Length: 129
Image 1: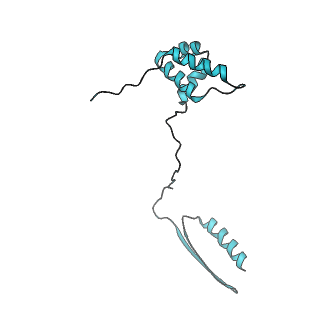
Image 2: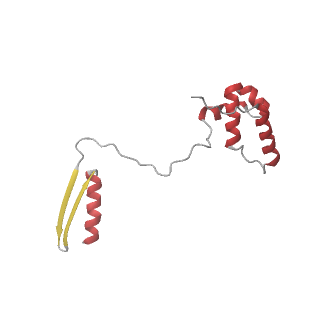
Image 3: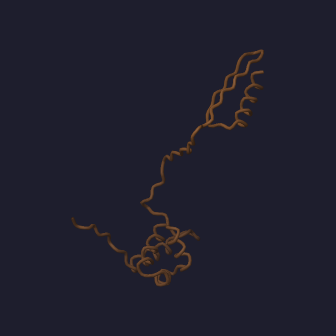
């Protein structure tokens, strides 16, 4: 099965893209992630100092961008993230029943500290009393 080959960027192509961006940018806008990605790819292959000089970039900033990993165009932020709390053995379960002049109150819950439960029950009892 043949390996798929991705076309390698050349310094000249990336220099032209930076030159075009510099000519057309408005004010002091930040370098787009797309250009940082291209510069990072070249720097990994040809060296940070050489590429920074060729593209008129700060070598330290290019190196930091490479280390932190510039934002990839292919990276899509998740639309939903499910967080599941770790469950330990013996999860406390409480049932509190209160009776007053105006009725009864029963609270049943899990995964709540006793202090939180007392605060909740007091607030609810005060609301109905």
